[in-house]
Length: 328
Figure (cartoon, rainbow, N blue to C red):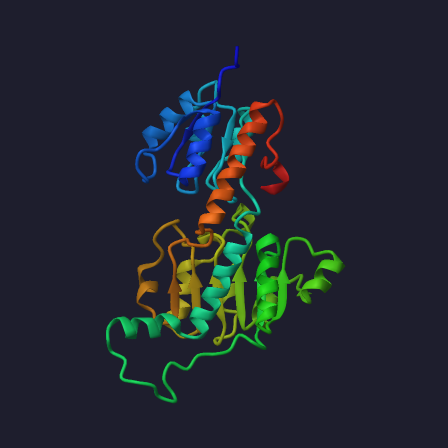
C-alpha cells in the first residue's frame, strides 16, 4: 500500500508545468488566483500542511511560524532570497527551510546590464518621447548619454550573480572592481580580471557605476547609507537588483534630485513593492517591477528545484538547497 503523500500548500500561482508536477507527486493545494495570501490564509496553511511553498511576497515571521501545526516540517521557498523567512525561528521549531539558488543567475545579470544601458544611454527618456509622439527628428545634441566601455564598475557582492555581471560587463569593455565579504580565489579573480577592494568606502568613491548584488541580511541593511552614497562621484550611476533594503532609498532619492548622482536603475525597493514616489518622476531613474528573474525558463527551473527539495525531504534526506546558518 503506497505511503501517505505529503500535504503541500503553494501560496502563489506557479508555471503550469510546475503545478502539474507538484499535483502528480504530492497532495497539493494550489492558489486559484495570482494574489498573495492574506495573513489568515497563511495561518491556515502552516497549521495544516507538511510543506509550505511561499514566495518573496509572503512574510513568514516568528509570529506565523509560532502558529504552525506539528505537521509542518519544511518551508520550500520558491526563490533564492529568504530574508522574508525567519529561518532561526523555523530551525528552533524543527522546520527546515530550502531555497532555489543559481537558476536566476544569468537572468538577473542580464537585467543589470539592461539597467546600466538604460540609464547611461537615456533609453527611458527616448522611449517616453516616442510614446508621447513628441519626437521632432534627429539632432546632434539630443539624448546624449555615455558609453559603458572604459567605465569602472564596482560590484557589491561577488557571488554567482555578481560574477555573471562581471563577465557581461567585461564584454562591454568595462573595468571590473568588487567588494565582497570574502575575497575570491586568485584564479577566479584573474579569470574575471577583477580588482578587489577590502574597503567598500574606497571602492564606491572611485567607481563610475555600482551594481548591488549582495543578499539582504541584517549586516547589509542600508549598507549603502547616506554617508557612503555621498562618497560616490556626482557622475556615477547605481543599479540595484538585490533587495531594496541594501540602499537608503530616501538618501538616494535626495541625492538624485540634487544632482549629486547621475542616475539609478532599480528593480527592487525598500518596501518590496513601491519605492519612493519621487523616484518615478525623475528622467535619470529607470524603474522595473522586480523583473530580475522574470523569464519562463528561470521560473520553471525554480519550480523544479522546489520539487527536488520537497521530494528529497519526502524520501527522508536533507533538501539539497537547505538554508544553513552560515548563509544567514
